Amino acid sequence: MIARSSPILLTTLLLFAPGCFGEAAAKYRGTVASAPQPGYSFEPEENPGKLTPIPGAEVRLCVCNQPCACKDEGQTVMTDARGHFETKEVGFPGMIGISNYVVVRVSAKGFDPIHYTCDYDHRSDADRAREPSYGEKALNVRLAPAGAH
Image 1 (tube, rainbow, N blue to C red):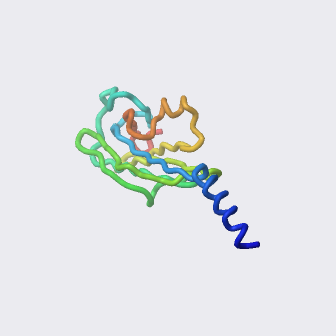
Image 2: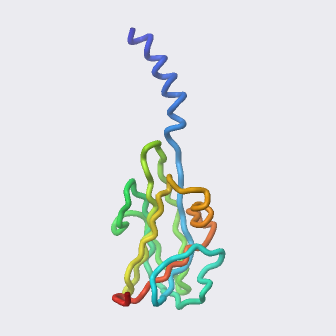
Image 3: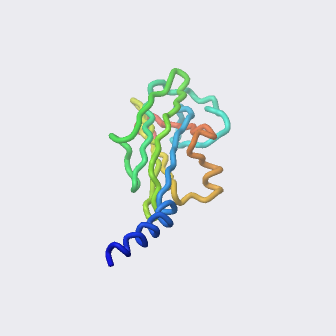
């Protein structure tokens, strides 16, 4: 009986496994600038408000299976003299019933850090267009001086 049920089990796995697993990736580009109020926006161009760039800011990209602080994990890049950054692609597996949270944490000496978090697997089409996760629009981050708000 075991030998006979093994092909059925194998066939079932082959039919349903591709729908349960997938692969996704995220990467971001944009700017980090100083502003009186912290925040971020996705725009067609970088630093559209011509704010003062913050060179040497740390931009960390993480993917977690629950919302995370993204303090020690993930991939880190530093902004250049223009406040520009571009992360490398971070790939992650997809699986039915498991959420992937993409987190971008931005920090700089003398400024309060800020997080951008998206529940990658549960975004609507409107969310994907407004806040793309593969560098289609610039992620412009505004950091406020430490203790300013």
